[in-house]
Image 1: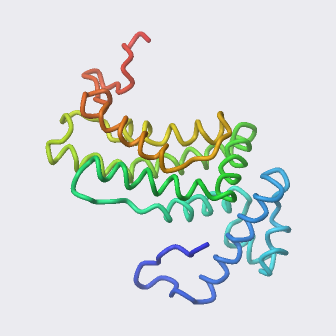
Image 2 (image 1 turned 135 degrees about the horizontal axis):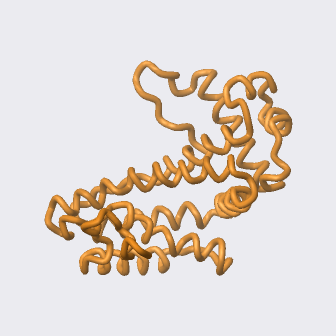
Length: 215
């Protein structure tokens, strides 16, 4: 697992804080893969990482804090492409997602966190915040396409990116099958066509889900 990039003036790569962070997040990742969220404790993370328990508590405070940072770390491993075309960007992003989620440990992490979120409101809040932030970030890719005239001016970037991600989570959580490049390419092609046809446009009443104000 790689450590996140730091802005100038923050902890230098390879410094003690960076090594602590990497050791702890790696331990969280491994513990989740072995025991699931229910078996994850601060004590186990400290023991596996070799980092003093007081340090883990001081920096992350709780399991939810660790999960939040781990999700952010994993999300940072999926770069935001800028190929110059929406079609190229969607395909590149979808393939990066497929490559990441095709890894067994990441696959199990998603299952564990989603399962925990169904039972624990705090975990659900962490998961929702993570996806909101990732959708907003990836939405910049769609906005560039709008600015280039590839999509209708009232296209909703979050709707487009939600549609791109949906097949992956269906495959992982519902169909319980591996994700692969074929899934990535078909998802990118379908979403691009739907977006071009205006399927993800914002409505005049402020709604973007295609329903009327009365439901």
